[in-house]
Length: 582
Image (tube, rainbow, N blue to C red; front, side, top):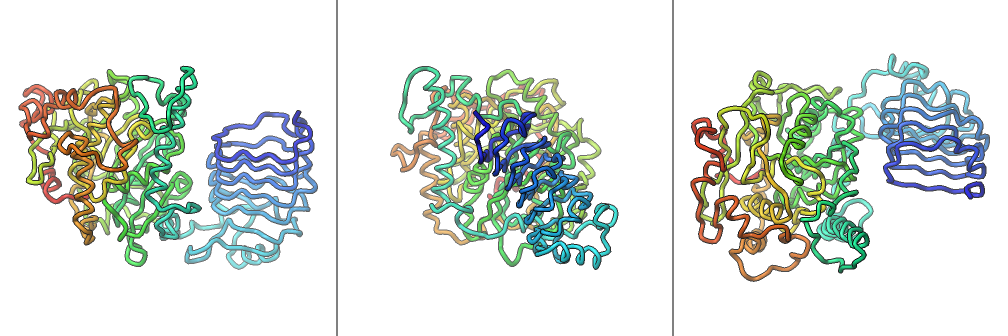
């Protein structure tokens, strides 16, 4: 059935391996495109190939010889950072693209390809502003000679490139719209996030032999509501980061990868809110081969509308990873944080657990001159206090503190008297540190309409998550640290935005909490679940939002007095609750 196939395109299908014998089973294949997958190696391919594209396969290390494909004219291997060697290629080749293949150790197999007329990469200009493009093999060889680079031993002779502004390159073309999308950004985000829920709901309806409208709310009591859409056990972690002009973000990302037990399984999605001409100091650190695991959407900082807005945008960058970690842009990690969080999640007595709290503060200098400023590696320095106490630092549990003058609740974190064997039930949820299965992105996507909302984010999300069947747990010990000082970084509050923008958003929060009776527009998909009720949530947390009542138990985080370490708050937590920013 496959012998007559001439073209095969399989984009973004998470394919990890190709079957053996492909060369024999598809002898007529001329064009093969396997972009955006997870291939580690490529076996023998048909000799009939004319065009081959394997770009954006981050794990790809090896491709079998293609010399037998005597009619092959074009090969694209861009952004395969672990590829060590270009395969043997036929003399017929005219186009070769290897931009972003930073792991290449040799160009030996292309030195005799005199028909090459279009070579992109793997080298960049001295100022790192562009990938070098060569129009002939002679032009490439001339460049190598001038740079004193032995093409057979690239890593021995080619010093590390200065990738200053590497992350800014990832975040180029600042625009209100994501690439290749015509609708406004907000429409794009809503459509992307809600389409995932619709697809899951439809699949479950088919299993049950029923049908439903595309606007119905998925039922969270069914443990299969997101089965097959949360990574299928792929063990990968998607880390969502909103960053507003924050120079610490680059070091947060470096710490994520440097301290992970399996950095290749960590994928980062960043919503950059940046000033095009003033934020170069936010992009001085190189992330090397980890750059392939970093996805970005950039918007001009003047279009920023607070953390909820940015977190919704970042969630569109999820690509099926099994786990979801939501953090802020100024954090550090202990060694093995990824394994430790997964282990904690498995200990939780709930089918839908979330590990969450306010992390402890980390000490350091000004954000513009952090302790580690390496520009050619992903090495990062854990703050001194965190290093001393890393796996034995007592965690903090979230507690209700007070209602502010604006009528919105303020939380705090109180240290436990000791580390715990298993995660304790937490009554509340923190936006800056929440680890769970990625089903939360499908079941309870962020509401991009919550513009400029800071206080109100955590209460409304906790309610939505709880009514969709999720439970919150305190980590057994500290694995993440947060920089509570805002020295060296602005917040979105610097923007002069019409107060009515936040006012309209707060009506959405108040409606969810039962304070506002009139339903605001566009609530479909961003409301409560049906697993539990608002009343059950209020009883569980010990807070009545309409009457602004907080129980003694809520102020203790639901734990006995003896479990708290003298009720001490985390350093700078009071300041964080007063300023309002992220």
